[in-house]
Image 1 (cartoon, rainbow, N blue to C red):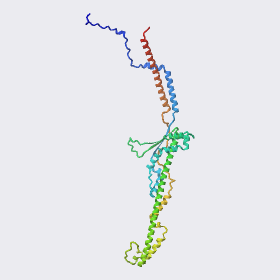
Image 2: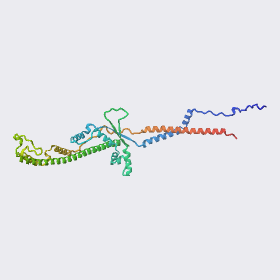
Image 3: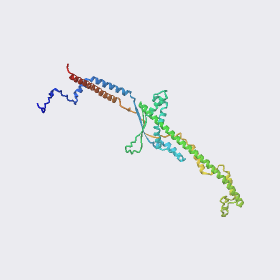
Image 4: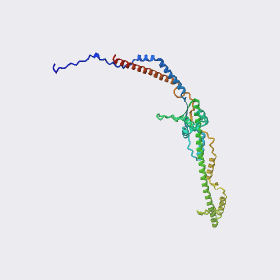
Length: 380
């Protein structure tokens, strides 16, 4: 055989090599359902266990009831007495920067004050009934007060994203408590507490403004009286000098009574004559109070007496108007018992079915590996 001859390679028959089993990507639903049905007792048990856990959680979770009140700026009837008092102060020229809008904003500011939250809740009825804390640690008491104070909220109902052309603004006041009656009562009493704080601040501001006005008017009266006394003293001296001049000139009667035209002395007027100057000097010397003949001083003294007679203790007003009184909550916040049980049941069913299918998949995988190892292991 020549070197150029080539030997035909000899290949084994293809049947001697096993074919790789095709990968099955389809899911056998009937097989899955049969697997779930076979483990129905286990699935039902796990589902019931989750449902019971959901039921227990619905009773163990803290209940929340929120009372709401809707307020608007005060109307005329709400601030009638205050308006009368402010008119009197305006007449007496006392600056009082209070109006309906100012009172409304002051109320909202104080409603959201953390300091006033704590001051209100620190009162004995709320410490014992609402906070459920006795004479324990002061730090625990403070933490409890702070936690409860965060349940007071005030929300502006105006939506900046919408073109709201309403002629008034409204705010919603909220308080959340473990019971509906407590939520309504605490919100109502807190609104009254804040109203009282607003009244105290407004009346205190009015009293301070009146006291400042009285002090300033008294100081002005002292200066005016000193000025009048100085003028009166100078006037008496001028009358005395004028009388001496009139006597020296021999003018006894008033000059104009004789039909004479006389140019009066600019420093010492002698036109009244000696008799008239003598009588005028007696009248001026008889004055006991220099302010007796000054109208402006008397008016100022009357204003001071009027300011001192003011009494603001009886003024009653409300810095808001209720669109809705603090409500009694009819529905608690958060998911209800039925919803929690349904959700827990669905979760339990999903978990149970997933566990059964995962266990079956692992068992099937283990069987496949065992069969493959058995096939590849040569027989002895």
